[in-house]
Image 1 (cartoon, rainbow, N blue to C red):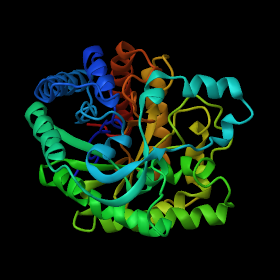
Image 2 (cartoon, rainbow, N blue to C red):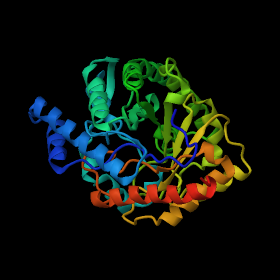
Image 3 (cartoon, rainbow, N blue to C red):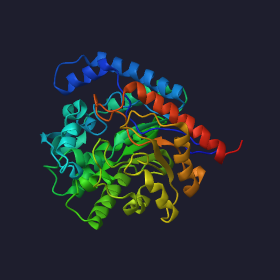
Image 4 (cartoon, one colour):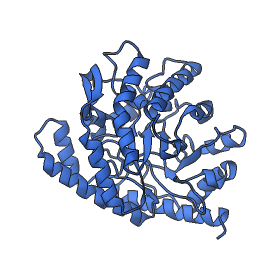
Length: 379
């Protein structure tokens, strides 16, 4: 089980910067340009070894493969499941409506422009058993016994990215996705890693997928999404599961984000024991104080993001320690680990943070956790 016991453990959220040549190979594959499959597999494996080593050098305790094999944290499923052959998906980010220049910046990012999210136009089924296994073999070979996690798209976020043009109801669609993704989820855990389920639908969904609903309606949809998720991981122990929710990893105004306090209790319905969430960005950094008056769902381990993933500022370790300490003070140090708001490169080729700065930010994460540990664990 991954939990802080005598110091604050550190982890992150998933995607890390990919090598330039791997980006070019993956862009070509997404565009339908022939790419030698064996060469791509070899380059991914090499990149995983490098990325795991860099995480460990930075002081990260719980590492992953950086999502080296995936074109995007959610849209990769189109290559592993059948049923996604429709037209592209479109949806509106409510916070960008009144700021068109911000919208142009967000959607002009090379990574976002290159991603493909065709609608569901047929029955969903597992089509590729090899890739999840290969991902885990690469991670285990590179990790050398370190604690690991591997991320996978949740049923809910898949339903957000891929429009349903086939199933009679949204609930039917969610459960079809859940059943098809079960193989990947169980494969991760069978290979020794903790499974991270990426769930932006549980927060970002409020101002994108479900902007037409009131808060009560959105909370009802959250519970529906969690029911599908829980069904998909029914064979996996809660302590081998972590859930990441966020309000959208993009440099927008985010003034339409649903407050964490309006939805935190719903997370109590989620099976995963560990919850990762954004807590460093300017729209949500204040919400730690919520736990002074709002009772946190019981039995959870909380991983606030104490490093921001859209800024090239390198957080001072003292600030990181303060952020960790605030959550440890209200939730208990044994219930807190230190993380990053979201992935640094959620879509292949995504801009944002300078790839070299990423490693300095992760070093600040480890240094800040060490400072906070001295306060809460006097060894």
